[in-house]
Image 1: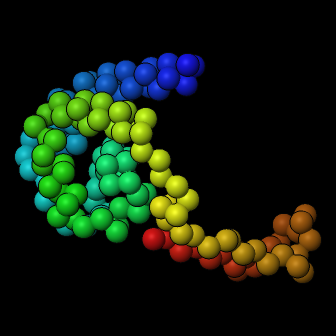
Image 2: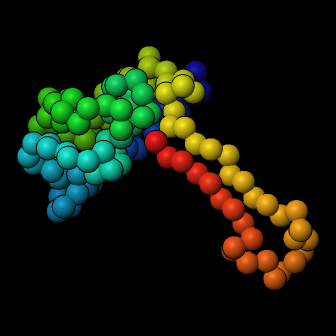
Length: 135
């Protein structure tokens, strides 16, 4: 019960924030047009969770951009539509589960400090080997 109350309060906070941003020019909250996203990296952050839950995957790069644009244009009706998105996201969050297989794959970070004492302030950035792969 406490979790439901927390989620409801969070939704109300997000709705209040969205209402306060409708008049901000150049923000997703005041967008009045149709979506024609051409790159997954250009998806506005406030839309990402809604899209992940709608398509059942955290790997949005696997979802065709035409499908993303179609869904967004279907639910978007101009400024103030983020309220609708947040409400839909809230409902989807109750039923959609994204499991570990749906998450972007990453490799473990490798740090080679075998020859460097922990308190050695002379260690440089070249002493660390970091690897990461983003989906």
